[in-house]
Length: 95
Image (cartoon, rainbow, N blue to C red; front, side):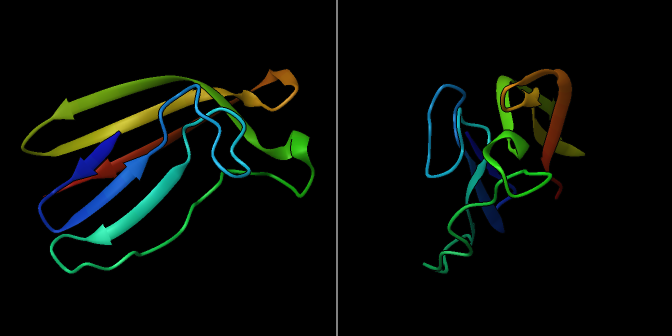
């Protein structure tokens, strides 16, 4: 999923795709300034500790289009291996 406001671009991994330590997608894979040819980061993971069960396992992805105020992607799921512990993350860009 690509989020941009013309100044920055963020890339969020699609649900169902494992990337590095991300068990099921939903992580922030890249962040860069538009037209600058730079790579702002390698990956951001949502975790609450250092064990595998401390990472978020996202199962849903919702696009929020409220242009011109904002566009966003909200991912939801649970902690890996703990279906009773809900996790939601919102990625948002504004003009």
